[in-house]
Image (cartoon, rainbow, N blue to C red; front, side):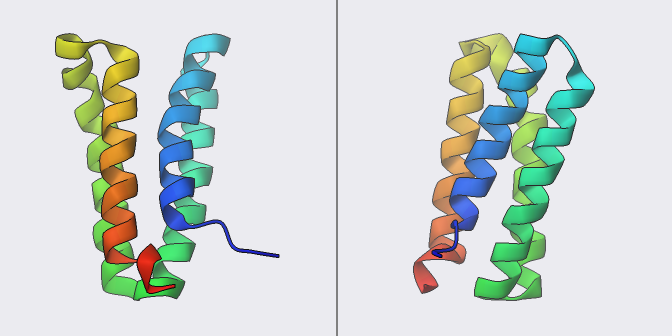
Length: 100
């Protein structure tokens, strides 16, 4: 079975976490989705690129989550979430996923 790239886990966690929180009106459920996908992404990053890269990408994931909040005030919630998810996915691909 093929592995799911870290970029997919990260983008899915950001978009899915927000979607779950919004549609269920339970922020903690969105947090569970965000954390679970982040943990899966971090495992993939560590396997693909090592611990230092996994730490840096995990920090970028958390920063993207935090940064989406003020960005949402300027561009709207969904555009902010999609924007940060795309940025983290691209960064993940560059740092870890393209290595194979």
